[in-house]
Length: 93
Ligand SMILES: [Zn+2]
Image 1 (tube, rainbow, N blue to C red):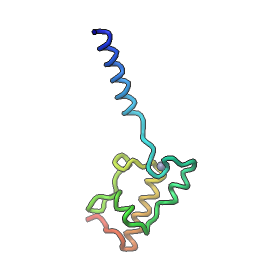
Image 2 (cartoon, rainbow, N blue to C red):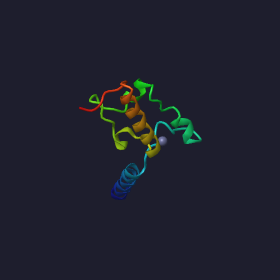
Image 3 (cartoon, helix red, strand yellow):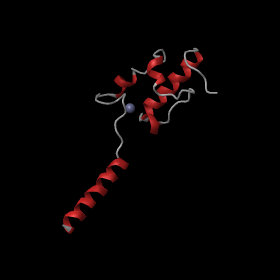
Image 4 (cartoon, rainbow, N blue to C red):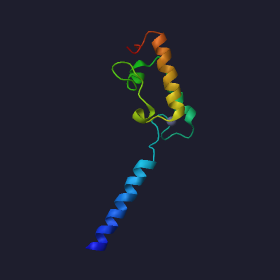
């Protein structure tokens, strides 16, 4: 009973570490050979798509919250800002 229990604990620890260190692939690059394919889908005219990455106030979600990689987050940021200029999306405040 005792050795079995300690082994289960060690496994649990391993699982937790994996969870902390591993990042899930971002939704734009997932399952694609090249990032460019996925990143080409980020479009400032597609407001419904962009609205999933902002709060109701219009703030852009952080990378941690949205799960984007740095490249897609950067492109998304530019897309949201351009959409704001084109009066498709609200500014914060
Ligand atoms: Zn990505």
